[in-house]
Image (cartoon, rainbow, N blue to C red; front, side, top):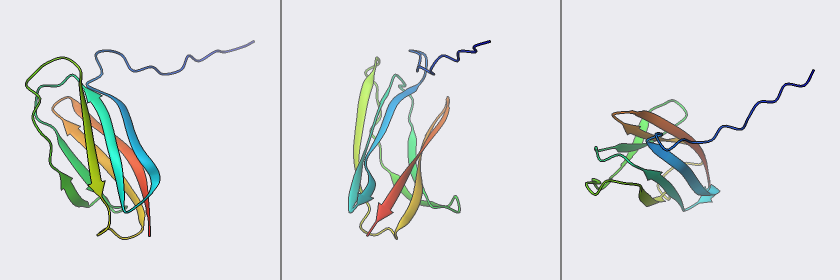
Length: 103
């Protein structure tokens, strides 16, 4: 018996798609990119391993509709070395990705 599980593919209805963080691990700064169809405000936070919000990343509202690409360059020079989570929060839910900061 062979069981085949198809790969997970983001559907058009997913509010946040193609989330990328690079370079990862990062030294000094890293880039966060994603696409969204949401016109509502969103919040982006950087959380430490304890789940504490150590930084809020300012976003610009999207009132244009359709698929919009977001790109943020995050300065990590003031952060201590370690593992952080990037949390993108919307009215439709949230997405989390991990980034490693080196010195």
